[in-house]
Amino acid sequence: MPRKQKDFGMRFDRQTVLVTGGTSGFGEAIVKAFAREGATVHFCGLVDAEGARVKSEIEALGGIAFYHHADVRLEDDVKALVEAASVATGGLDVAVNNAGISHTSARFADQDMAMVEDVWRTNVMGIWHAMRHEIKVMLNSGGGAIINTASILSKSGAEWMAAYGTSKHAVVGLTKSAALDYADHGIRINAVSPGPMLTPMFERALEDIGGDMSKFAGGLPKGGPANPADVAKTVLYLASEEAAYMNGANVVVDGGTSSGQHG
Image 1: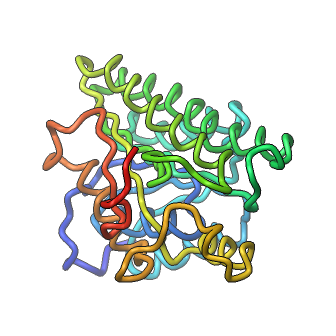
Image 2: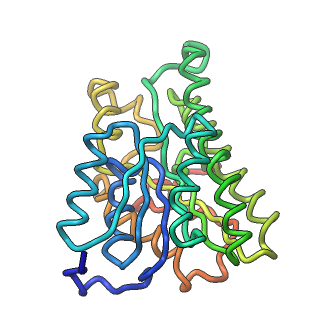
Image 3: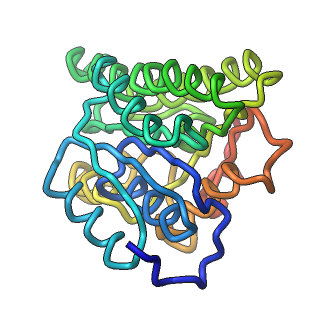
């Protein structure tokens, strides 16, 4: 299908991009941003109706996108996703490992262990599985860029949100470690740590705390929650040649929320 929009720039024209967790919120914004700049985007999720909606909206603008049902907690699903994204072109230029979940607020000792384990399997092992297979493809195709979604809660303690905060610290740790392992193989691996954004996850968090902002970990920016599309611009920058010397970084994009925090 011919592309109709030419006013966004085409930094990723003819590139293959994979995005996990791309059916809503921040992930949806990332998928659409890459598609607008010429990429062929493969994205996954668990809600097929939302995947079909995002794909249809991209195609209506002349972009190219493919939705895959995949659960990042299952390595076989992730392996199949990476293979599907790379088979047509024989490579993978960019991967954004964004799939993640949050949880209801509770003090550390009161957090349900089944929930803690699910957060870890999704937020940490989901990225681990994805990078294992993305890196193998990129090694065979001459390199690439990987961006992992962390959080401002990767920079400090996470009151009421220990499972989520711990998982995001781990995302930064595995990002930095993998970046060192493949720095001499043409693969750049960075993390982005957003603050509060106007996403379904943010809305669920507000509902969960019932207006008690003392339970909202991380704080709110003075300008209010971000538009996910604005934060997605940082992801595209990290994936682009403009960030060619950035590797192993954790880029905080939070409207100044964490500027007065320590940790």
